Length: 132
Image 1 (cartoon, rainbow, N blue to C red):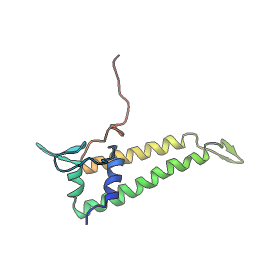
Image 2 (image 1 turned 90 degrees about the vertical axis):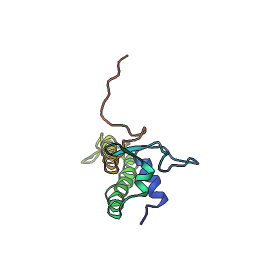
Image 3 (image 1 turned 30 degrees about the vertical axis):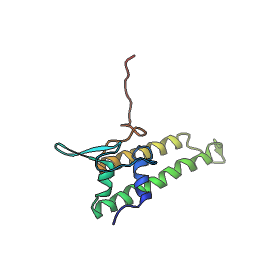
Image 4 (image 1 turned 180 degrees about the vertical axis):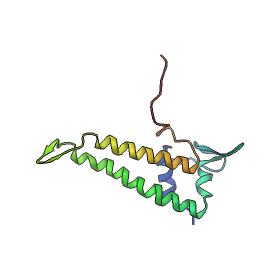
């Protein structure tokens, strides 16, 4: 069973890589490469189109479905941004950042599972020091 076109696109997007558009990704051309064993590098496209059935199941159930839910929850959290306190309920002021952190952490774990580095729209996370 192969991943659907939508699952391939979602995996690429969640991993932090841009859409393909009219570009062709294959075994030798892709923005995303992963080191899989000593001296062996593979493209993201190759990794995704050559998964074992059990690996596809892990990707879709452990990562893709929850990531879609986490992404939707970040957007939905915007519904509560206008309320600071209501009766005994008080909004969690860090809800959006907390949800975003969980979302991005799950995205990075998905990249690790696939065996590729997070893309340019995800990065390694954490802080960086830049010398001016």
